[in-house]
Amino acid sequence: MRAIQVTRFGGPEVLVAAELPDPVAGPGEVVVGVEAADVILFEARIREGLAQDFLPVRPPYVPGGAVAGRVLSVGEGVEPGWIGRSVAVHVGDRGGYAERALAPVNALISVPDGLSPREAAALLHDGTTALGLADAARTQPGEWVLVTGAGGGLGILMVQLALAAGERVVAAARGKRKLDLLRELGAHAVVDYALPGWEERVREATGGAGPDMVYDGVGGELGLAAFELTARGGQFSAHGAAAGGFAPVDPAEARRREVTVRGIEQVQFAPEVGRRLLRRALSEAAAGRLRPVIGQTFPLERAADAHRAMEARDVVGKTLLLP
Image (cartoon, rainbow, N blue to C red; front, top):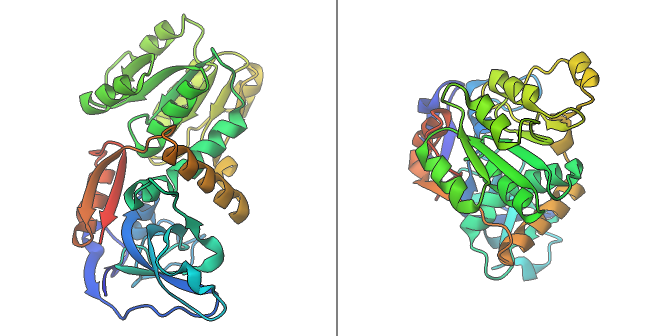
C-alpha cells in the first residue's frame, strides 16, 4: 500500500512517500480503507521531535492518528458485519497517513447516513474537542464569547456552537478569507488580530466589558492578550498552543479578577468519553446543526505540503489528506 513515512525528525521534507506491506487485522482489530485522514498541527510537533518526552514515537513511522473510511477486513473475534461499514476512528498516535490503517474494533464509530467520510474525518479531533469545551464552559444565552483562532477547524465549530446556544460571538482570526467566512457563519463581530489595536475592537464589540467567555485556540502572547480582555468573573479556556505555547496566564491575576481558567486537561478525554463526544458531533453534523468547513485537501503524496500550509497558517478550516 501507499503510505507516508517520517524518515527522521525534522521539517516537512521528512514526510516521504513509501510502499509498505498491507496491514493484517489481528484479534480484535479491523483494517480500514482510508478515504480521508485528519491533519492536525500537533502532528508537525511530533514530526519535529518535540513530543519525545511523552510519546513513544520514533522514526521511521507512519504519522496520522485519525481516519475515516470503510472496513475492509476483520480479525479474529470481530463481528463480520463490520465489513463494508463507513467508520471514523482514532488509530492511536500513528498509522493514518496511508491507504489502509489498522484499528481496534472497540474504537470504531459508525458514520451516520448522509455524512461523507471527509466530513467525518474533519470532526474526528475538532468535533470532539469543540463539544467538550462547550460542555465545560456552561455559558448562558446572551453572554459575549470571544473565539481566537476562529478561522481554523476547531474555531469554526466553536463559533457555530456558541451561536446555536444563543451567545454573542466575537470571532478573531487572521486575514480576509477567514474573516469573510466567519461573517458568513453569523458571528456578531469579526476582528483581525494581525492588525494593531485588535484588542480595542473586541472591547468595543462587547460594550467595553470584555467577553464573558474566551476560547483561546492560539496561545502565546496573543492568548495572553485575550485573557486580559476577559470580563471580571468570566471564563478563559487556554486549550490552544498554535503560537508555540499556551497562554502564560498568571494564576494570581486570574484570582484577583475572579476569572475561571481551564487548560488543556479539559480536552484530554478518557477513551469512552471521547467516543461519546464524537458520536454526538457526527450526529449533529448529519442533522445539519454543525458544519465542518474543509478548506483544503491534499493527495497523500503531498503530505509535506499539507504540513507546510498548516505551519504557515495558510489554511482555512480543516485540512485533510486523501489517499
